[in-house]
Image (cartoon, rainbow, N blue to C red; front, side, top):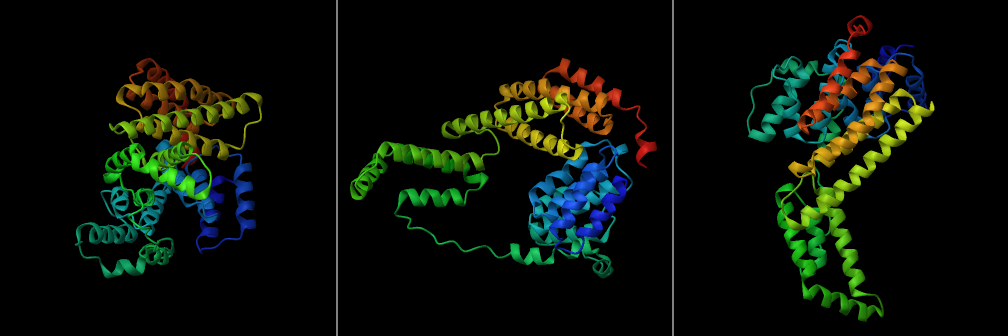
Length: 370
């Protein structure tokens, strides 16, 4: 069965809400076994099955990754479907800024007009009038998220700790951390960790419980703060404590990226590569690690993440092109290396990736996919 038929089946299967795990696994297996090259319909079907398994974040990442493929590797309407799905997903999360960023310049469907209207009301307090006919034309894909709207509107109530307790108070700040408060919170954390009063409190607690080292407890607290701040840190910040956290997090991401690419390329060279759907998932994960590592790098450090990804992913692209004949996928890999090489100032690497991408183009995408 072709991947286009499997995509249609995935849409039908996931349209009405809860899907039995057996059916999800069966369709996933058939998707992995298809002989068609990986294309937009493949990725959309993968995203729908991930969503049916409750993996909403991964489903969103997959739908977004469809944009990495050449337009000619997408059947008519596939990109529009992915865009509509992403807009609806953002609306279900109540993320109206993301809804607005995803909307196209021309709102051609009732669903997109509805979400533009709701985003306008949420962000601006006003919005253009919505035609009443639009309500009756909304597809089930959009209507089924109405329950999620109401659920997201109710914030869970958490017991607030005593503010007199400095450690608990700081942890509460971390729970409510926003990007605007990141630097402020980091400075407060740094001051707290250096405070003699904190060590006195830890010594007092060690005496009361009959054991334990205040210095070890202080180290444990520092680790808790580093992990919490690292999870919230999305970009490099010129603040001493955050700079250290960013550097450590960046090294972790580079190690993860190196390990994942190395493992994948080893399997490819040994002839034990996973199904192409899993190779694409790895590509998505590797690009995610790379983007975060670059975001946590200072301007002069960008070349190192690029050096790692270029050296290891060039083999993957060549294997996809020559061995597996997965030309749309290979084209996406080389375009990625071209773009990142240019941004990192590696014009030689970018030029080589650009030439490799050109070698993927004479494969009749239009004839094969439209």
